[in-house]
Image (cartoon, rainbow, N blue to C red; front, side, top):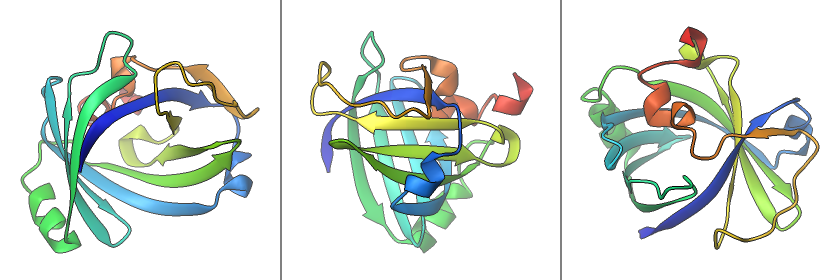
Length: 157
């Protein structure tokens, strides 16, 4: 499935989101290609695999092309073995708030201590409610992209 992904990304200042979460899922992901013009991601989310291609972000960092297809978890595991160094592990919490659902990623391993929230929008100027636990906006800051966290983990900043 292809579409334009429009999202805003924030640091998280408390763990209140955990009690509001409707679900939580462990994610393991790697990158076959981390070129910023075309990242190719392999992900195992729960018991399902995904292959995703993302294009370059626009100037504000909010919008980019995304194509994704489901693959089996076994296929994804085989592809992860081919990925560049720096496999990411995280727990994703889906947190409904207002008209949107925030995806809050609590990173593990070498990115432990980093907690990011993303909200997907229908257009760049869409208004959305911000929960109290949301911190500083980091949309467009490349060091917070998963592809970059795989190369330079949060614990090494």
